[in-house]
Image (cartoon, rainbow, N blue to C red; front, side):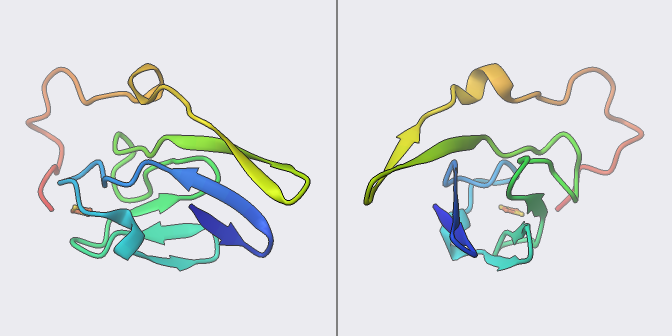
Length: 93
Ligand code: FES
């Protein structure tokens, strides 16, 4: 869970590259950078900035009084996996 100037975002903890704990990453603006191999993700959209197929699932957080309510998004429904011939793509860390 991240607090960007009072706006809260929640993403899955595991990096889609090799599973690093994204809570150990760093944030600059709207960009989350994984601590292991520095792949980057847009925190609001979940878009992969290093590899477009490596997306984060962004969960909704709503404020209810003093509480934050998390609505879990099914990551299997929103995540696209690379398919087909990847021989021409760079998939190395
Ligand atoms: S595990 Fe996150 S970039 Fe490699």
